[in-house]
Image 1 (cartoon, rainbow, N blue to C red):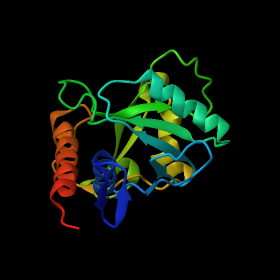
Image 2: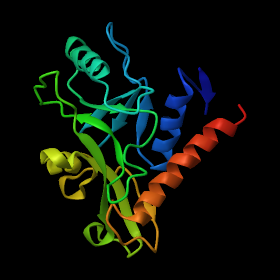
Image 3: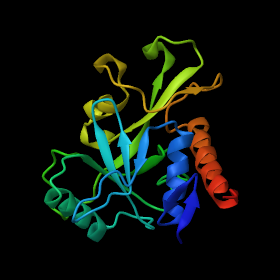
Image 4: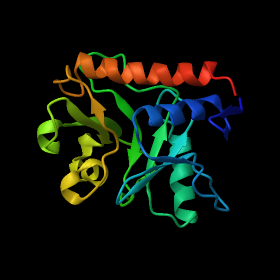
Length: 203
């Protein structure tokens, strides 16, 4: 269903929900950032050095057909960004002992066999002692930890490489890892808030 939200005409309410969720995380994003002959990505997450093209689909599991399509569209469109496939919710949000994940990530330099599942992009926390800020400050970014891509996380949130953080939060009680109940509750709260804001906003 087409949705007008914050002055933007989204092609679906799901896109509007992800747009608002990005805003809740304080991430710098653009809607439909490029228009090629073959492809119009839904979003672009913009970092200081890198950017990620995002496709939103009403899926609950990795969809191979969709992944192949956007992977090939990126090639024929002659763009070299990382790719992120998002579904209709936050994967692993309700699974205990697992870190909430954003979606499925494909690094721009990976030669994919078009058969395997893309690795999950996990939320990442950088605490205040690394940021040299006061005790209650922390950042939320994301990275693909299962494929040893910590350096990819740095592309978006690491200050030592001169990159701007994807998000910034002030929360005195936060002290646990991304898989903790407190962090899971925070992500769940932001996701539900984004959904409610989109559903009840009067344009």
